Length: 317
Image 1: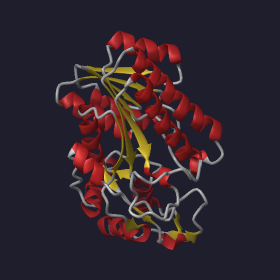
Image 2: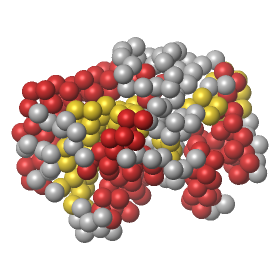
Image 3: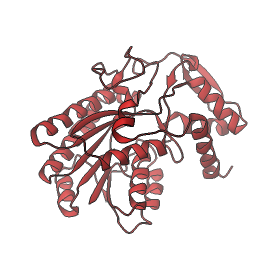
Image 4: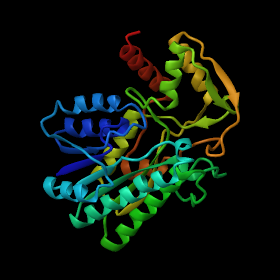
């Protein structure tokens, strides 16, 4: 078996690739090293993967149809973890065309290649953002999730439905995983954990939506990766599953935890919550527990401590 990890040089993708390699699998990563955040961070992630004999890196774009098709043919791809995407809710507000091109058309290219090569399993990374400002709490997969607040969740929800089309027409196994606020060591610098930790050193003023009275269901990277691997290992026809911790906390509490670990105060300013952002993300992970044996084990406080330790060592503090 050969596993293709799209976006495999990124935060979640590199951790998934590494865990597969550690258990002896053959792994191919495709990544275009775009500059949404510093590509040097992704290069460092790949350095870890290059230590394994069964690892291959393809530096290209999932929108390159010819290259994607050749990749499937040359490497005998059997399983796909599709993690590549243009990320970020607020960044998508003024870039609708780009987000649809990458997140929907790129997904179609991979599904087409998967169909041509009769792959065994296709795992699609989606997002809790598809739920928008739903009044159904916690978020559950039976929610229609048909009121996306920005282009990013709209593109992801569209990709979810496209996955069902391929299941319906060619009986492809497609598992959609809706990620909830993934964080941890070697995380993305555009996300709140890294930004807050940086602010303890730089004094940067951090904008807190609604005075920090918004809630997010932060999910540790190790738990997320375990869920992705379980989904790769268990074809289920077509399923959509939440993959989150199930314990949202307020942003202000999140800030206070990092202040405690760093011993530094963080400068903040109260700003209105943008129209693109919901007041809460809150995961009902019952389905993933039942179908995948998903069992998130790392609390936010413990996960942030692990993340702070990594950041401190990374920065030489």
